[in-house]
Amino acid sequence: IAVVEVATKPFAGQKPGTSGLRKRVPEFQQQHYTENFIQATIDAGLGAKKRGSQLVVGGDGRFLSIEATNVIIKIAAANGLSRLIVGQNGFLSTPAVSNLIRKGHAGKIVDGGIILTASHNPGGPKGDFGIKFNCENGGPAPDHVTNSIYDITTKISKYSIARDLECDFTTVGTYEYDIDGVGHFTVDVIDSVTEYVNLMQSIFDFSKIKSLLSGDLSGGKKFRVLLDSMHGATGPYISTILADILGADSKDLLRTVPKPDFGGGHPDPNLTYAKALVDQLKNGEHDLGAAFDGDGDRNMILGRNGFFVTPSDSLAVIADNINSIPYFQSRKVEGFARSMPTAGAVDLVAKAKGLQVYETPTGWKYFGNLMDAGKIALCGEESFGTGSDHIREKDGVWALLAWLQILADKKQSVEEIVNNHWKKYGRNVFTRYDYENVDAAGANLLMTFLEAQLPALVGRDLSANGFTYKVAVADNFQYNDPVDGSVSTRQGLRIVFEDGSRLVFRLSGTGSAGATIRLYVDSYIPASDSQRLLQPAQDLLKPLVLIALETCKMEQFTNRKAPTVIT
Ligand code: VG1
Ligand code: CO
Image (cartoon, rainbow, N blue to C red; front, side, top):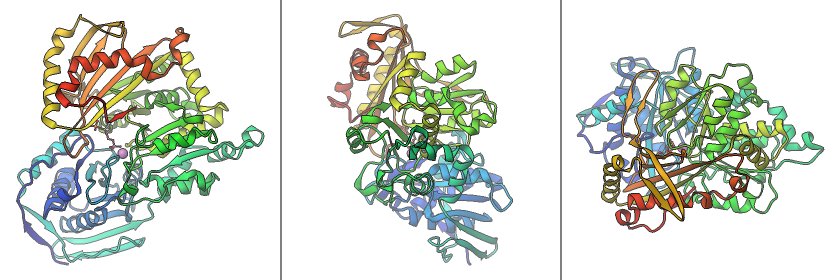
């Protein structure tokens, strides 16, 4: 098979964000656009290892996945990679890719992976597409790699491609090719589900979870789950694990067929986009509900009647009960981590257990070094991301199984577990307001205006609804990686009050059009304040939200009276 070198020109804006390059589908459909980015990704991601290396390729099955998988296969062959491990139909959840990279293949290490997803963003011909590079540890490429991908995209003048190579990746099997002047090239098309299911079986006690669901643990009373895969990547994994292995009723597993446009939905598991699930739980027939995002790394956990577990609390509860999970019983747990905007509930668990806790910038890539160095076993983000060092991505199905394992062990309801957690540690009340798709110029002005005010805010009293908070710290968050010493600046504006309550402002790095402003608000209610401990989060945080909106002049800069999403 011949290799051709195709002359090309740089496209502006091929800069990976929080989690890879995400753009509207038509942008990727421009001639050479995807090819340029793949060539840059392979060159920067693999560097000197490129020749003879092997990569995993797969994604959430969204619109354009098939075309992009084809492009990757042809460019990888022309660039001298020895092998690609491709999920059948180009389909793999993000956690499954991370696992496949870490496992190695054909007795050799896997040098990384390319994930085709825009995660929780809608798909379809007018929706979003995305491409993300993961490194040899199975985690998202760190900043220095994504910066060098971007750098190459600004200078690229040609890419190499084996145009005539045809690979039927709809069928599991091994496909071999001889590439002129380059060498031998293999594509292993693998079943998308098997290896991930094996991994979960090695982490959890499936027979105990099965007994929970069947009712054997509680005198015959079945424990019913209601799970929403939102037509994203978790569907096949959820049906196999929950229905085939654990015996859940398949009619309680919703939207498990992956669709290129997610059935027209917005595959983001939160109270706005997974509202149908919340409503159905309110019927009171199910003991636990969960939803997952497009690529399967996010999760939302709900209890009976739609009781909402904030992701910050979910992380803390799993941390507190980490010994219920067999995987952790056999290893030394050194610490936990959370992203900066995530509420500090897990910090209190770490303190009680005498463990370390780390605060990282938003985005899973920052946890990788800590896990590789054995400093943390568990980590999470307020954006419905929870995971452990079993892989280097957040993992929605893992989080569900962790909860089921804990529930099987404690024999309490979701709500009881969370309420008891608050009674023991106090409650870190949290909310996030997202202003999606606002005018980018207005959003940037808001951030500039706010940042300029920060120094003068320190020491001042801010009030709303009769509540007053004194500003202790106001800054732009900077992270110093304790493992490799790298420094990440400008990771979000913080206003921290004397009582520990916080306001955080960030611009999203995963959007594809306009800008999204995220406002994070959290506050701590001590366990002794039994009057307020169980009150709704929105009531408890109202004064802080008002202070935040006033301080940043949200309405003036965005023309929005209300956020798009509240979680
Ligand atoms: C968002 C979340 C962040 C998460 C990222 C990727 O980023 O806030 O916590 O890691 O999405 O998640 P941003 O920059 O838009 O705030 V996923 O499930 O899209 O890969
Ligand atoms: Co995701």
